[in-house]
Length: 215
Image 1 (cartoon, rainbow, N blue to C red):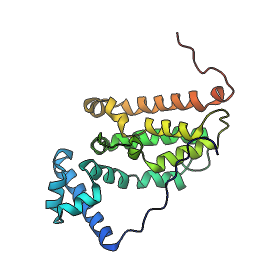
Image 2: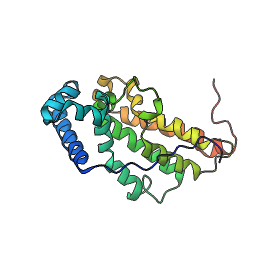
Image 3: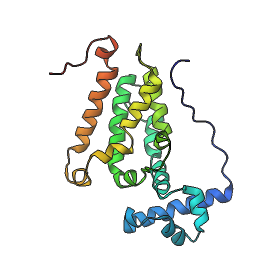
Image 4: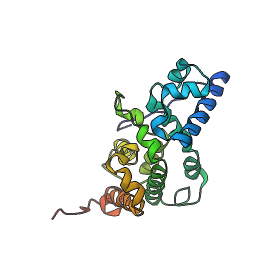
């Protein structure tokens, strides 16, 4: 197989006590986030509030950003359900190009709704940038690309690039004030995603036509 394969692997079974600790920590973190905002959600504060040891918190999350990443992962449940069984075009039943556009729009909406958690989930100390990507998003985008007729394109690498365009770093380029006060920012980001996908994967791109000419 050509390209750069990305495998998710099978997660190790979680011990019962570890599962209980995880649920308790995430529930406590959500409550702290609601009460005081992201600035006050730290490793030490979470350990004290949850009544669990600092070692437990560090083993579970690794870094402070890991707390927010776990909260972000947990909140993706509804979005993932739409991908599996929701109505088209996000869910099954639509053409892959339309599904890819619709997915990007849904993910932009979800990121903006979770913008504070998404920002704090970013960790510049991570040695491998790919560890911050969402496996479900990457897998879904790659699946849709493989269903299209994209001759000459490395769909594995393209999937990684498109996943990055919808990941948390997207919000680093938009100020909090703009996200809070500009009612059209979601539409503008979604439209930009659609333009990107259509130019790379649309009929013009697939037939070898030049999608646009710089003036």
